[in-house]
Length: 573
Image (cartoon, rainbow, N blue to C red):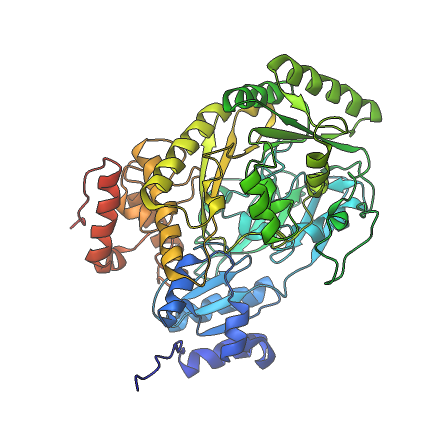
C-alpha cells in the first residue's frame, strides 16, 4: 500500500519562538496546525492552493503571532532580525502578496487585533485607523459625523485600508475622489529592520495630520506599490469627504434573509442611500459605450462611473445556477454603464446631474433602463444600489475561486481596447477555466473611472477556476501571466499589471519594465531589509535568490515571452 504523503510545515527555533512569546504572551502566538491554517487562509492564492494539492508545506507559516500595537510589531521584527527568521504580514490575504516566499520556516504577523478606528478628526476631515480596520468599520464611524472616505472596494469587510496602501488602493467607486493611494495623509510603518517610519505633515513637531508630504523625500510613495515589502503598516491617516447619505444605510424592505430564504431576490433590493441615485444605461455596441463613458466623465458629474459587463451575472444572481442561466441567456446588457449621483450640495444637484446624463445617453444612441424599459433587468441590478459604499464581503458573489486578474490602466478607450485584445489572446491560447472568464471579450470589460474628467481608468478581467481541480488552477495562472506578459510586450501600462506594482519573477525576468527597474528595486531592498528576512523575494530577488531561481522556471518564462514575440532572457552573471 502506497504511503500517503503528509504536508508538514517547518518550525522556527525554540529560542526564537520563546523570544516572540515573551512579546505577545503565550495566548497570542501559536504553531498548532489548525490555528496556523485558519489564520493563514489566503483569499486569492492559486499558487498556494496548488502547493497544497501537491502536499508542499512551503506555503504554510511556521507559526502565527498576533501583536496588538506598533511597539509589539517593532519588537517582533527585531527578534526576526536577531534570529534571521523570515516574516510575512497578514491583513487581506490577497493574491500572491501574502504567502511565505521561501521554503524556510516563516512566521506570519497577523494584525487582526489592531482593528480600531482611533480618531475621526472632523475639523481636518481625516481618520486615524489601525492596520486591520476595514472599510465598513470606517464608514460606520465616519457617517455619524456626516463624513466618509470617498470610496470603497468590492469587499469592504475583507479589504483593509492598510494593506491597500501597498497595492495602489483600488476602489470601484473612484470617479470623484480618486483611489485610496490619493487619499492617504500619513502612515506609520515598522520597517523590516524594526525602525518606525512616520510620513506626512505630522512628522514636523507641532503640525497636525493634514497633508501627505513631510520634509525630505516622499517616503510614502516607496510604500505605495511596494506589494508590502517596505514594512508592516500599523496605522494610517486617510482623508474624509462630505457624506449626505445619513448615519445609517437603508435596509431592503423585505428585511434580512436567513439560510432558508437567502435565494430570494427581494433580500437584495435595498434602496439607494439618502440623497443618492444610480442610473443604468445600455448601448448598442462597444464603440458607443466608450464614447458615452468618455462624455459622461468629461461632464464632471457623479461620484462613481463604471461599466460592469459579466460582473452583473454573478454579482446580482442569488445562486450559481442563476449566474450560469443569465450568462447563457445574455440577460444583462453586454454594453452598459452606471453612474452614482450624490446630492452633496442639495437635492437639486441630483436632478441637474441626471438631466445631463440623460442628454448624453440620448445624444449618443444609448437607452436608460427604467420601469418602462427592461424593468426586470433594472430590478435584478438592485444589489448595486449600495455600490457607492460597497458594504458587502465580496463572497456574496456567485462564482468559483478567485485566482487572479488582468488589470490595465489608462484613458478609457485605449485601456478598454488593450484589455480586450490582451485577454482574448490569453483565452484563445490557453482556454477558459469557467464560462465567466470570457468577460470582457464578448461584452464590456469591467471599467471604473479613477478620477474626475476620466483621465485614468482601470479595466479588469478575472479568472475563477474550480479550486478543487489543479489543472484549472494552472490554466488560471497561465491566463493571468499571459495577460501580464502581453501588456509588457506591448509597452502598455504603468508596470507589469498597470498599477505600478511588480512581483517576482516578473520583476527580474522582464527587464523591459523600467527598463531594468529590477536593479533599482534590489538596491532599495538592501536598504530596507539588509538581513533579507521580510517577505524575501516577493517584489525583487536579491543576488542569491536570483542565482538560485530554478532554470526550468526560467525556461517556462521564456516560452511565454516567445509566445508574445519577445526574445529570451538569460540570467545575469
